[in-house]
Length: 434
Ligand SMILES: *Cc1c(COP(=O)(O)O)cnc(C)c1O
Image (cartoon, rainbow, N blue to C red; front, top):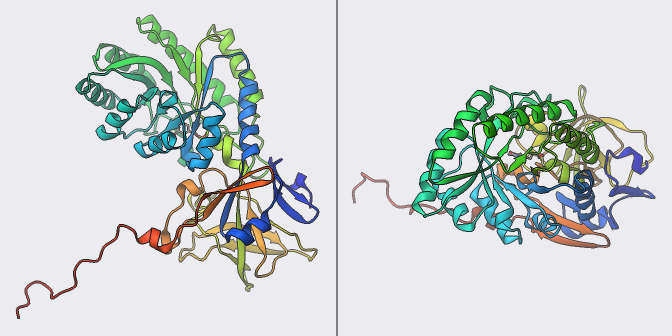
């Protein structure tokens, strides 16, 4: 097997018969830290970021990493040090950015359900922009800011009603979606915002979906956004920045998304044609910056050949890698040290008591119990959606930087899991008498 067999992952490759992340042999990391184990390549993240930076060369742009893709402090720090801002969706996300050295004024606060408490804390911290998703939220934000003697910088998230042609659960820019303000309500919402004493209009934004592999949805969304900017400005409300959200897909299984630099060269040409090329721009990529930087290393526990199906039971499960159960998503699964034997066909499944706990269906693998496998493209929306289902502690995370590796999150212990739980005093049940 050679590195060409691994989709879109120049930093994860075989050397001889051993899979490496940068200069680190993955089996060594597994021996040292146990499995399941997430391993992220720093240079893969920085090279994904560099593609965006090339695409935007010479433009005014703020790249805001959408940290819900992977909110590990060690990952946030990589992007903070590279000058990124951050797209957050909760107060907890904000605390993570600040703890990892990110700047508050480069934070965009997105999400349909911000609480008053989150708004207050974000205003106190001085976040750069609130991406507001409804008229009701706008009124509340204005109230909260006024009560603090502040004006909240706002952008209205518009719903451009374009189909990103991705999985329905990660399509966000359709009319039927809970996200954003409907196209026809956008100008009235800006007019309302302009009259509110507690907000200050600074921008406009959209985010049409995730794992988008075609450029047309972006081109459509940009045209619709620019139509709106023209209409809003014609109503006398200046728009300083235009934020196009995230959503660019990655190669999981032969997917062919446009590269970030090619896509943005095209999109910027469209902006130039329409006279918006000099505007302050923002983007919020998540998956495309981290997805293919990460793998999840897991051990084969048991082989269960059967009449109808062969099961390969591994020690990673849907609580570690929720995307197959959630979206029927495909992750490539490869051995750390390929065997020369003829492969058999296996359903690769985890130990959780759910039939939905599968990681890959009908995979050709030559495996034995004790072998180590890598689930590829596991840098985004895996650990960030991990849970403790079946009382499983969450996996450890390692950041690889050349010949060095750092534990950026320890494996979660059972004590970690039970912290905060208490047993009510066990005495007599009420009603019984002595
Ligand atoms: C999830 C999200 C992103 C990032 O999406 P990716 O598909 O990971 O690039 C960006 N902006 C908003 C508002 C989001 O909700």
